[in-house]
Length: 292
Image (tube, rainbow, N blue to C red; front, side):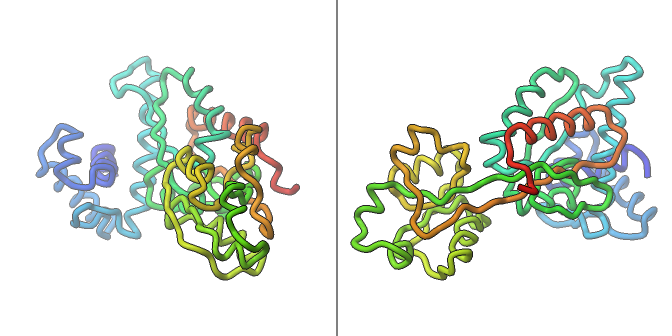
């Protein structure tokens, strides 16, 4: 494997096509095809699909992960040599929207002072960020998955506490209380991957719910709950005194605790190590311990 081949593979996955990769790398589509074919002959397997968009094959995912890691190390090597021909080191990170809207902001405040690093954040549900690691889209992730992806290390971060809440005005409009009223309440989910409301209901033995609204925005989700669109799960940190004047706990439902972990590539990258140390420090200051 050589650097040009690995760059081509990463660009194809990022851009979704051979033509897009050629544009980004300033070469012809024919050159991209030649690099991919040569690499596939070397490894003995197809690496990317020839679909629209292109995706790494199951065996190609390992090559894409390698391409991401090599890119970080290459950029750091140029910087150590006093060269800046490749610009800043791009560090691709997967993080869930709730973390990005709360405690991960402390990481961004530190990163604002890293002139040689560019963060490429991929927002995904914490139960699905590990898939971005497996596909080679990122080299680090905040995830709910405690088992590390091959080639990555895993470190506990802490627990995010989700509280079931509803606008008091909406709750008062129901004629009865208890589980029967919960089952008639409209529900607000972040997206179709959001399992937190279902987890709260399962823990209380509730199997039915009212109509479902979808609001895929961190701030918009809270606004929807405050407006009385339905009930939902919010991070305890969002329950400021002003919010608590409008939202009350959903009767009969308990908090849902979601343990979070940090998975990062096991490569000798100074900048990735700095990012890891910052994430662990900020999470330790803002999240509940996992063993609590």
